[in-house]
Length: 133
Image 1 (cartoon, rainbow, N blue to C red):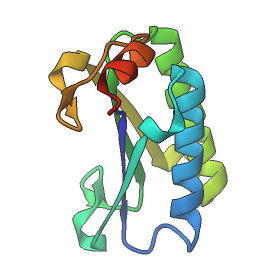
Image 2: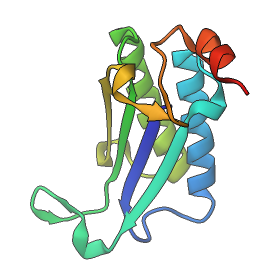
Image 3: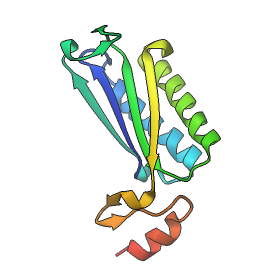
């Protein structure tokens, strides 16, 4: 259900960092938003170094953009962003000052997965029981 896109300039992430970061993003999101880890999608996008800029200058930030269903408490979303930023820095060695985490949301009914409109937060078990087959 949630989607996280991690965007960097090519060569920014060391070998193995993607898998470790994807696992940690999944763990943190599942724990805070109370969803099964299998719901979490993580995608990496590495752009040519001349395609990433910060303040109008070439840069090497780590940009983590996440989408989740609207309805989670704001304090949990803030905690999610903070924990993702700290984990990304710890795993990649990129200083937090070069990491941007943005969590966007929209109503669950604005998204479809597996041909089914997503459930509102807290309705996952009921939704799964109706759509298992």
